Image (cartoon, rainbow over all chains, first blue to last red; front, side, top):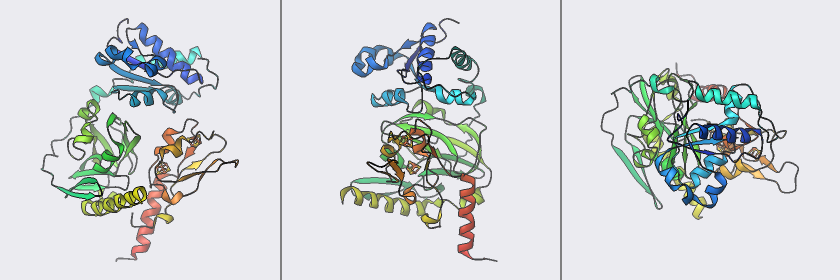
Length: 290
Length: 92
Ligand code: SF4
Ligand code: SF4
């Protein structure tokens, strides 16, 4: 299928450290054959303007070789918007393969990776995307507080928090999950949201998707247990919503809860979180500014 | 969590068979959980487990060689609930 990767821009790992890297590079070359534009990480590092046109028009797919995630880091450093991402080591792991230490691609590994790319995997979520419920429409009032030069908001009611600064907004047996204003401010500009699979069963404190900002990477740690019934497609397209409106439109995941009464024991309500956050920010300021 | 932090068993464990002391995890974590030990064989140790945020696993993602592991989350959750019940006494 020539041309099926047209409109995609690929930023692969440089691929000279170990096998996974060389595989990332080979995959990128393969996708280029199918019409994708390639971004050379080394040249891009030196001269980002060289790729201005490609990056301005296409969807960016980043291919990392290993967990070090150099390609992702590079994309973040340069403030690029990442539309999709692959990690060769993780893909191999799922296939029960351990990548080699030498920077030589095993052709068998490569063909399996490419098969995984062409197969369902990539876009499958589309059809499965259930419609989020219309339950979460009530107006949310906010408490605000200043600590040093920082200004924070916390909802007044209806939200439950864990100590990982993630919230669950609860309506009946449904909850929407997201991250607090504190996360948004300390992580700075969000550039990537990777949602969990719809249908995934979450235990309390499981990962419910991951986020990346220009400064850091973090998981959304689910305050509640239950099943993922919807993900926020808008947030996938515009992770910066978290910076603009962390508590309402930037919900990440909707969950049909399994045991809210049980989960609740280990959560803070709005009032408790407000107190917790004030104390946390006060301590941080103290450490930072003495 | 209603339980003193030091009673909760949650922090990363470094597998020294895998760790290459790249220090990515320490660079990443803002909570001073790790400590560097210049000139020692174990150049990085988990010096302050109590500073680790319960249920956070973020540093593991930065570790290339997959050298960081965490306790079982379910067990930790159950243990916290148990301690809370014991502390709360029997309420009927
Ligand atoms: S789990 Fe989180 S808080 Fe604990 S050491 Fe790792 S990054 Fe730091
Ligand atoms: S990131 Fe992993 S390999 Fe690097 S110092 Fe930490 S534990 Fe060791």
